Image 1: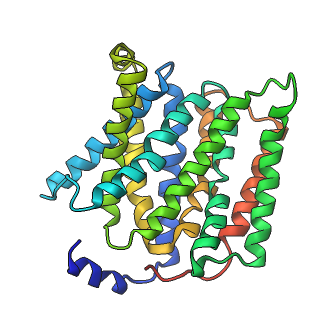
Image 2: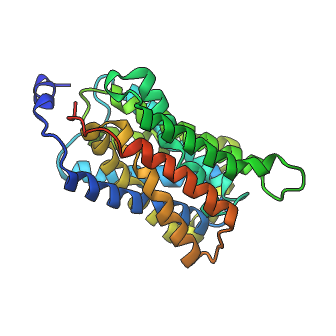
Length: 308
């Protein structure tokens, strides 16, 4: 990375409340719609769905870069960052989400995924001096995990009718996203847009190879009949929000950026009720409300820190 990039970073202005709110709302709505379009993609193999999501998202971002005359190939050691983000913020959670939504409804899946900021807060407390948990944030983490217990606890009971594997898949999704969010904080000089590009390229390539190896080429035969939701999922619900999110992490830090996880499930639940005719029961409402209350306690405390 050039010395000009390294020198410019410290002059980045502190994020304003308007910047944070507008980016959070846009990013959370776009990401919140992703589970809707995954569900609308029907019976596609999870690896095929992840491959198409990454390929479409990567193509959209690569086109944007190419139109600006910028390279779409990794420079120097960028491939390491691209590989990590392509896995933990890309194909791995995408496969897990696609599988989970064949086992559980969209609304509880989104609520479980909303626990990711709690994991981010704990990891950031251990790794970054300026992300230490205050008493309020620690209380928020504990409250949030209580909500997770309400959401996933019944799956351990016999004849509960709740898919334990679907629940576990979404818990792993939350952990995977958290790992990627914290990792982005450690990448000091790479522009957020290039991280977003690399994530989608890495995700698309890896998921395609896995889909061909595990599901086989014939599994892609069903793609044309699901092209509309796949294009929307890849371009508007993946490429655009990840571009916004990478910049948000760089400007505000992983804990505050992960507030997206506080807002996204609200959009997801609304969209699922409106377009998928899903219903949300008292347990899901209570558990989701407790999780989001915990995330709010974690996210809405302290003063905004200056971007690195």
